[in-house]
Image 1 (cartoon, rainbow, N blue to C red):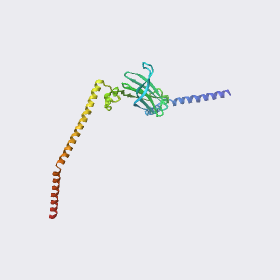
Image 2: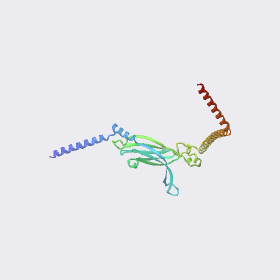
Image 3: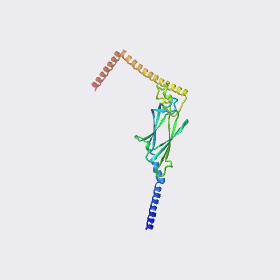
Image 4: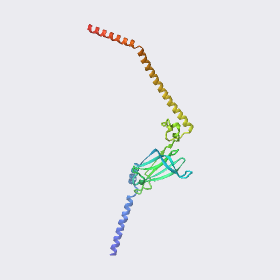
Length: 248
């Protein structure tokens, strides 16, 4: 009887061992599973929404923690699934690296996970690396891509830009920087061009108006002569038509 029990234990253990082996094989990050995950990762997309002004706490203020108003760039990450996570690293020339791990738990009701980035006076590069914890593929990179946020243009706040917000150096966010002298020179050139265009347009309108006014004045002064000529032409045409009918 003991031998039978021992034999049954061995058989049961064998099935458990084989089941574990097959389970491990099912979770192996083979080419099929890896490509399936890469297809899912290709659906993840990123965008940013500029120009949102919010209040933030500034712990570095001299008087202690205080509330400041800042321009914000909201980075939106879409289509994260339950078996995906995204490693996000941000960096800039004068900005220390910062790292985030984004998972499905970070996704809001609008379907996106949001990273709030206070606007900086230099471009910031974000690198997104996508992983999955499925099929034993957690150590393999599924996809990597980058996005560069524009720099905040402090010149946009100047009085020189109030009348020309459409000018490229007066945009709130730009991808390049210029010195103050270059900024004011280009603003002056742009405003001069606008002024010349308005003057040219006014000059053309004035010439057209003068021509029309002169024509009306000439017609008014010689209206009786003009009416006489028209009547004479009408009489001559009538006589010619009557003669033609008689001769026919």
